[in-house]
Image (cartoon, rainbow over all chains, first blue to last red; front, side, top):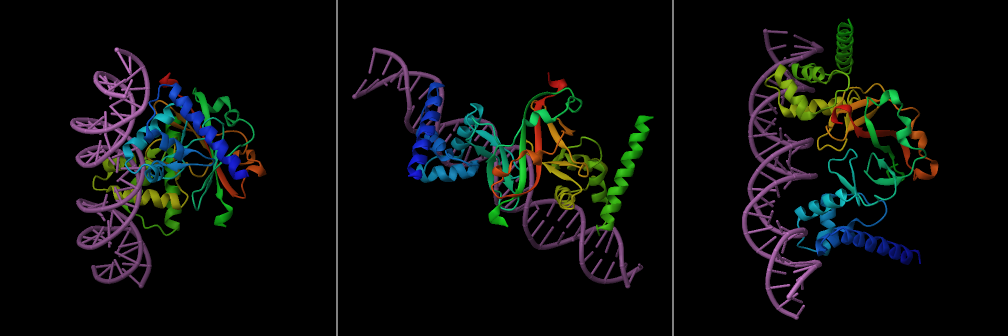
Length: 149
Length: 149
DNA sequence: TGCTTGACTTAGACAAAGTCCAATGTAGGG
DNA sequence: CCCTACATTGGACTTTGTCTAAGTCAAGCA
């Protein structure tokens, strides 16, 4: 029952995304559809190579370059966020339309989306802004997840 | 006058660092001394290759591997922080003994140390902790610096 | 439905950042 | 001053990401 609901929601989100992209003049290809599908879901924070690995299971001939290109385009369009935790590779977060921060397990690297209270930007006093015009703030909470303890 | 004071302070910090390391059983080599010297200062956030480039001017035969090793050891010992902004390479921040966050220019990449008010950890409600035991939080403020506007 | 065209994809070369290893060098205790 | 364990070196290797030239195909149009 919940499984069915979740699927329906995901399907809706997917078609929304593909619809938005089509409206913005995106040519719809099998490769792009697969990349978008792989990225769909909650708490999804895959590296480019992980996205490629999963995409290959659905579309064996998809190339790494296309995955990189597509991810870059999704980021430019604001549909996907790049997340730089301390890991070596950048991660891609499809949850771009809801403000959130990240909670990272120091042992296994799991990442959860979290929603702190207040606006982090407001915590930086004028005297600490060095004349910058601020555009945003990212918070990475560090800890150890239940499975790793 | 201020310049002199600053130099004196830096010198004090440096010898403190080397002293602490010696006490922890660090074998003191020319290479390690040079890496530590290169890292000294305020708002210093160099990449490993930048550290290497500067170290080479003082000690031409120092190798990249040694710079990586030494930086890794300084991080393990808690004397230097690794900073992962959105850039490709990790940066190394010698200001490890005073809690601070970072303000990054989106255009030129300049990084300033800043001190927001309040404890970022306190902004994450229990219901958003997913059973993690929290150990810290990093805040990256994004903006455009005066020089880039 | 079947062209046409320019945007998209591909494979592989290349680049950047970082790791690893066997051989060599040296700091510091005895 | 000598040892020896620890540190350094150079180069090969890995991982992550970028670029390019050539081939392919989505989508508008007849």
